[in-house]
Image (cartoon, rainbow, N blue to C red; front, side):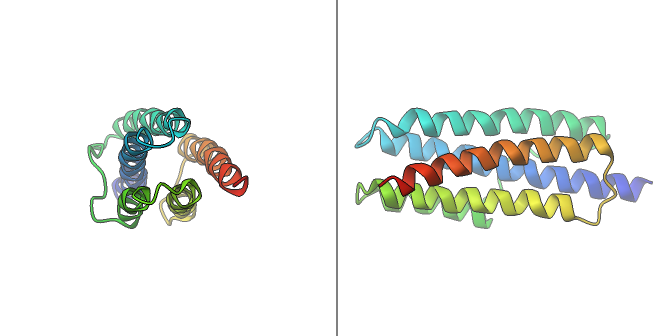
Length: 152
């Protein structure tokens, strides 16, 4: 039982780290967008706030499972690097490139949630519902970013 719980805590903690990456990425994107496209700033801040709520819910869930929640990002992970690449794109002031880079980060978040749902960890209904609900919210954000990009 303890091994199963430990595996589940690890799965949920991975999602916490992914959301921290997303917060940092959108915070950077919001800061940079203020320089040339102020209309993107509230969009990016909304998405960072979305991940703050996710972190809060996931952290509470890890504690409920008896684990210690993560408190930082993946730092060297794929999503973090993708978000940091957003800053490089900003130098060209190209809205489509920025949105494409953000979409890539959103794709990586979707992949992380898919991996969590497909993991070998034995998952109770409450955990599965939490992950599925967050995945759906992030998918809507992904689709918003894609829609804005496709309009250009």
